[in-house]
Image (cartoon, rainbow, N blue to C red):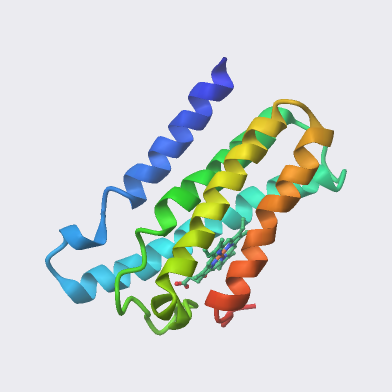
Length: 158
Ligand code: HEC
């Protein structure tokens, strides 16, 4: 089953770039904070791309492709696995859209990260059963984009 290898590869690639560079392992604090903010942006851009790909299929703008949908959800899952490691204390840069509230409510923030991870896992599994099974799980997953952004993202870019 090529899709399984593909999605695994995708996750591994994502994780290599983001998780292995765990903040605490670096000596230079300022550099760590800057790169954490940068990694957050990259991860979220991946999430944005994956979400758009799946949303277009759900809305019928592009044909349904279960493998593509599954891969998109595995990408979100990888983002969910990595994102929680990218919030070292003080890692807000000038361009960063992270709200200081993250560090005031770290437990709640991490809870939302894990919701993204677990729901995207369910949605990835549902994608194998077809569009009708996928739709509600996808909707449940993307709910967390909004919930978290409302609380923890200060939108600076359009
Ligand atoms: C647990 C919280 C959380 C969840 C869940 C979440 N985001 Fe984010 N998102 C953030 C934060 C925080 C930022 C700002 C990051 C920064 O600039 O440091 C952000 C930024 C973004 C950005 C802007 C990236 C850039 O280029 O600056 C996009 C796009 C985005 N998120 C898409 C999504 C999508 C799509 C989902 C759902 C699939 C999602 N996010 C789920 C917290 C979250």
